[in-house]
Length: 64
Image (cartoon, rainbow, N blue to C red; front, side):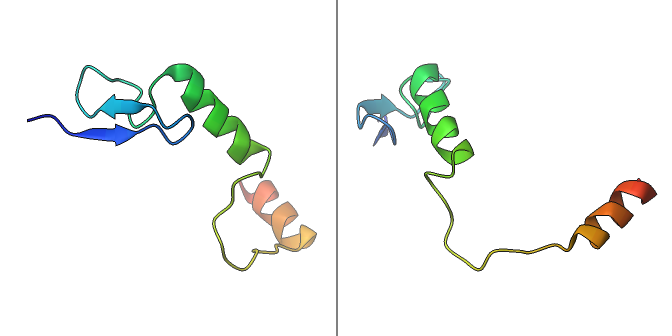
């Protein structure tokens, strides 16, 4: 019995197995489209934004 899921990008049916290395995506192309949407902030996770003061950021960078 094989399990199928829909590709989050194009909704194509994807078999959830070793035969589909890009799962849950149908292809590397759909995987990269999704990554681009996250990078462009077209997709987000709901919640309050975390604001870091520049001084805190600079202190962390200097201590690294």
